[in-house]
Amino acid sequence: MEIDWEEFKKRFPNLAREIENRVQAINIGGVRTYNVEEFDELKMPDAISYLRRCETEEQAMEVIDYLERKGEITREYADALRKQLKEKGVRSFGSLKKPDYYMRKYYYGNP
Image 1 (cartoon, rainbow, N blue to C red):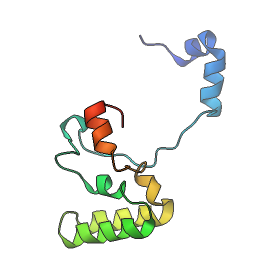
Image 2 (tube, helix red, strand yellow; image 1 turned 45 degrees about the vertical axis):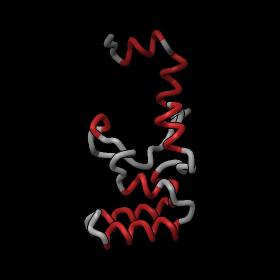
Image 3 (cartoon, rainbow, N blue to C red; image 1 turned 90 degrees about the horizontal axis):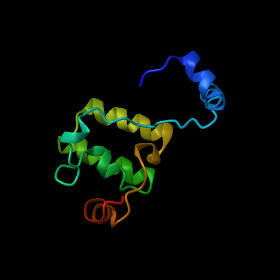
Image 4 (cartoon, one colour; image 1 turned 135 degrees about the horizontal axis):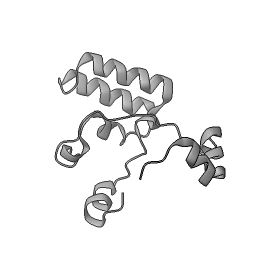
């Protein structure tokens, strides 16, 4: 169903006001640029998957340095990750993956 903004405002005035005033806006700290359907972090984790395991910025910096040194990520990508880490912190990569994360996600279906 397609509806123009003016009609939406007439039908849902309170919701329209909340959207316009950004009452419940949530900032998104990161976006993955690959096709999620083709990505299986269990079989092939990426840098972000590893960084979400880190509890401190120091741990995250070690992970970035290691991945760059081993050639898993490019220098440019490593620099971008370092910049994000420095400016926004370790949780900007996503919520902390606890030790049973994969069991809950893939076995129980509840990450």
